[in-house]
Length: 355
Ligand code: ADP
Image (cartoon, rainbow, N blue to C red; front, side, top):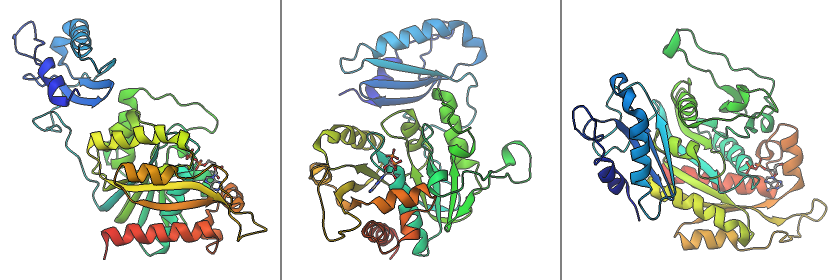
């Protein structure tokens, strides 16, 4: 399996035509990410080397595509040669903690629609109800729906005093949590297409240019899948633990497996699996449970990765209704089965990091 070291070794065969030094020695390659079958690199050429750009890009692509298990090479161009020492010697970016934030929990899923945002919002609210200082970063840049789940779509976050990089976005406070979402910055219904470097920079702003204050937990609602946003995030901040959300159907396991494999490759610790929509509880017969989407998905995923199955959340009509009204169920109906499960999950997370 091709590793970052293999990629770096190959890249070290490409030379600057002037000095005859290689790209690695010259630190013109800023970042190498191997997410097989894809390799993503950032090329950072000083302006005097721009005339060689076309040749270098072509050589990088050709040399990396020689690996049998690589079929896609993405090259992000960064023209300002970084003065800061933000990468370590082996070209793995150094993680930068966010001042004041103790733990970062990332909520992810292999595909959309499995209830990832619902879980992220309710975990955040349940942590806050346990008295923990909690923030929620909605990094689902393709479908940011936490503002509507929390009933704050009309709010506009303000910024602190200061100029340029000193300014910080002030999160919206609701139900005891501090929220920042891409939903505040884009118009509703507008498609958003983020390309590599732009995406990277917006995610960095979301992490570092927000006045988060002191937080016990920052819950991050990641976009679904295994794309650039997840990679950017995992390589920017130290994630304390990732939770993978899946549904019980065995057919959805393949996507969830890919998500898990990505975190493993990126060295992000995994807290466990949450199975959503496990059983249906009819509102008029709360003692009945129907396995609408089959069973076993969460258990299988957890077992094959040696991870705990942290929670199984039922399908509840109240969960959709309340969410549509902009109130998460764990706030509006704390005695419902799913609210109890969210509370237990929050207690489990708290116990893991605070005694
Ligand atoms: P994702 O973030 O994975 O795309 P969402 O959290 O937006 O998914 O959920 C998709 C839809 O499913 C929403 O309408 C949400 O209210 C509903 N939903 C999620 N989990 C449940 C559940 N356990 N019971 C009932 N409806 C749910």
